Length: 241
Image 1: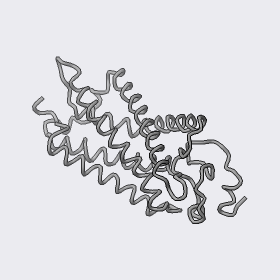
Image 2 (image 1 turned 135 degrees about the horizontal axis):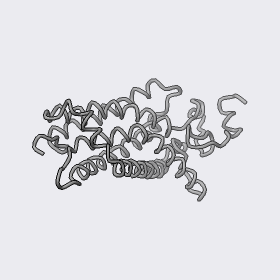
Image 3 (image 1 turned 120 degrees about the horizontal axis):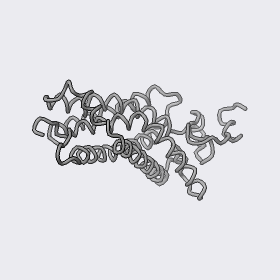
Image 4 (image 1 turned 90 degrees about the vertical axis):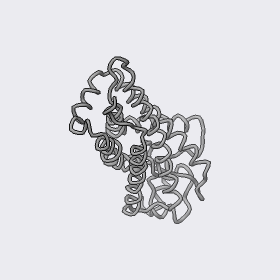
């Protein structure tokens, strides 16, 4: 175990902080290239949901990676292997799994009459209470996705061998391994994931909807959560029928 990476060492913590900051910068870049551009407060609420969710999932990944590596008393495995696998699955098959659970949760809360839950729409002016409802829904969806990923890692025995093969070039070089597993690889994968998830959770609405104060629920359905038809008054917002 002495030559294996330490997920909670001082160097690892610095790397994790750098990865988180750089990943958020990808959303800043996306904001300045989107059309129409969301108001600052709406964008902040959207990004905050991802940051809070990602922070929770990061803690889960650390815990599950350390737990998985120590689960075999006779032959403990490398925690970096399991962290690598968690990031790999979270940012690939985890995205459609997350979309599925968010769709189900969104429809369920709407059926029971909970307001302020349409993703990316917070009212006019934006209300913190709506943000909190949506943040709870988003974290619930993330947690369900994480559970599914954990089940896949637990029931299929080949994952650790696969990670060991893919990371063999860095084994024995702890800082190189930590830097790749906790900075380079997750930075690339999380930037793609953040970009995709941001497109899922933001409201799909024209710039004139922000300018003219159309902020009530039902104006424009979110990008991927619903398959409901757009209402007539939403179509009239930008002057087209």
